[in-house]
Length: 210
Image (cartoon, rainbow, N blue to C red; front, side, top):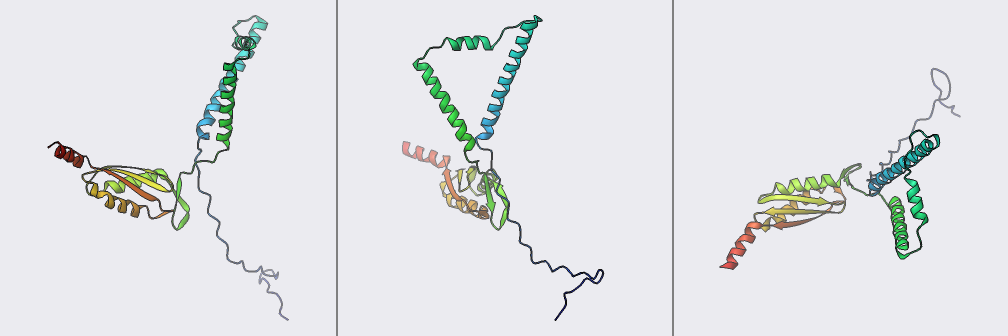
């Protein structure tokens, strides 16, 4: 019978050799704030304005009580006007509009965040933004022969390139070049190219006038 191995310095049993470590899973792709990034600051400003109005009402009430400075209340006229309201169609319509706005705010807060990142093939942890994809597509299109101007709009699945060129025959070359430059993305987007050639359109118009 064999005895367990011991450490030469302490004589205690040696720790078993550690097995291969599993790599950590890649981090989740970053997401944008979406519409919440716009609605949130607006609601914060509204709450701040409400807090300022409430603080002013408290100061006005204190001044009136002590007779120091006095001052008109903002809330009193509003409450008086609200107390004189009678049921009407306009009031019901305003209530419906406010209810719809509140429902929209709730749905906006619960909606999914916008995804503006695209993965890089072979490196799950690396991503790039759709804005950078559009810039790459624009730069690649501008490098093609015959292209005068180019611009691009990119999503996570498609890239739309608009080109002004000397001839519409550059469409295939631009499509191939942009597709090749974006082939390292995961998933590789579908490239759509729109070409306009003002010089050809002008010649066609002059030919028709003859």
